[in-house]
Length: 410
Image (cartoon, rainbow, N blue to C red):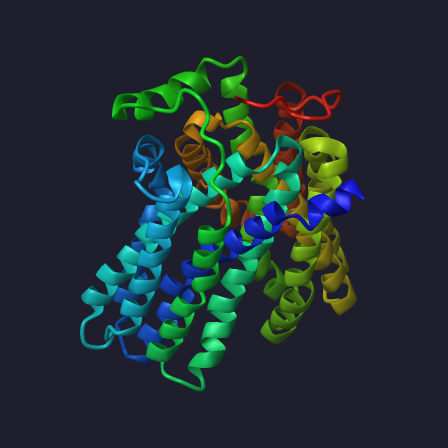
């Protein structure tokens, strides 16, 4: 009964809706915008350069201390900034729809950059709010619902946006998407402000220096950073080459798209929800062990598929299992990062950690083509499985099995 009350609580609903509000803007400046620019005849070089508008997502830690330091005179430390970011997003997304990619692509770039800046700012505040609103034992489930909301928002923006664009103008699509941010605004207005922890920054120096000093003063701080870099590195490397792999062993683009969409999306949703519920019972530490092991086994499934070859049932099984385990691992990963932030500097520390989390996605993915070419698909995926071992070994340092729950960082 207690578990059901937690699952259907106000805090979990807020986590889901805020995840939706964070996921919605992301692909409006990538997938949907690229389709619009292509339709308007914009040069491919310009379309490629347009990816730079996503830079704020990578460097959001630069202004996170400002959000930790200053409290607006309405709605409190977190909700005030959140309302500002969401209203700015509604206006800038609608404004993006009023631009003309064919005539003024650089105006489009400026407005898209404004969208990503306020989207990244919303991410900062939502991550901080979730950490401060949820009890330590609820971080796992709350993180999983946030991730699911994020994926639903992305799906609505990309899939829904592109489908709507076949029946109406892109201008109208962006106006509709801006209106889809309203549930986030209503949630911000209705949900309570978390309690303000003692010792919050009073100067910008404290907001910038103290979060770093506090983190690195902890025992095992560097081990935790290494863990964040390595925990999902094998999974990340394998994912970077899955599409060329599927095509190389004989699957058609239609087969890949149908199976990935049908099994992949729902398996990820189910995986992260299942992971969240399990974390309520097992705690974050033990979940990291179990989900990390399952993640490694799912990567080995690609090696098995390389041996089996073209088989739709085998492809469906591999994709379903991989996305299921990936959803569970991501939920535990996000919960772990939230649990090691100090409530005084939540925005700054979480922004730094989440930026660090993105490093393997770029660095580890870069040499994957070389490895696949020289090792063959079976050898490549075996290497990806082995790459998961260092992250699992680091669990002995950062999340020992015998400790069911992480200690709260006050």
